[in-house]
Image (tube, rainbow, N blue to C red; front, side, top):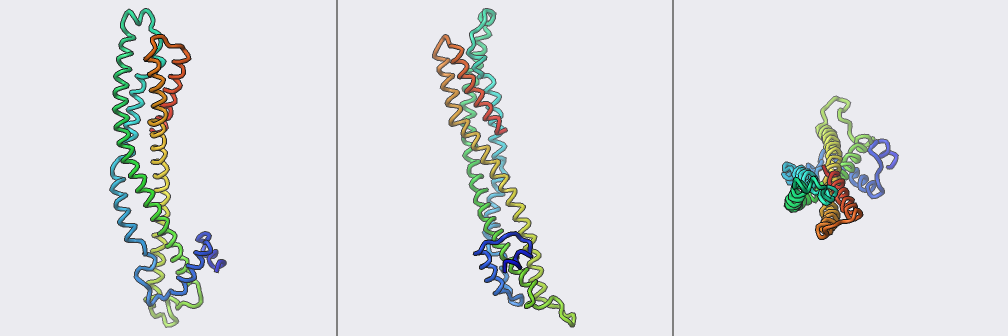
Length: 261
């Protein structure tokens, strides 16, 4: 059996899959072929794919990415190296340092608001990610079942026990013809599913990376940056080392957010 399966060039089959193929092969009778041969999961897959398609029509990932882009712009006004450096005599005379401080406070307020919006967008994106993962599981199941049915069908057609599609008298064999056509259509369906599976895997990886980078920024790097910034605000005279730590936290936050856009 394994040698015959290798000749089909459909990849490797596990031991339990070989047993299932043998069972399917033993039950093949083109004249009495079940109407759902190879289509056991079609209704379930179709229903769930519609729910995924509805979510994909909403630009959830693009919305989160646009909020992250806006965050990066606002962070430009919160650079510790600019905000907390000692003002020069000219800066004091012209009030430039006050403008910088006001811009920082305004940026902090806007950043807080954007983070809340982004958290809401991320929660909605999590729903999409879960749906993508569910569809990947459904698709893997159906791909596996299709491979078994196609392998059994091709073994049947390649065997010496089935009736040829055209008899010696050139009479039309409807059952065999329908069965061969069904296998051709199942093979096309399998190829389509495999392509969709690759696309879903890519979408899942991209969405998971976007969420992971955002949550790391929001729940780890933002608190670090806020803590260092607060420490600088509480002290009138800040040592260069303190400003340097705040700058490192600020750059780490910006760099991590940049990975998401």
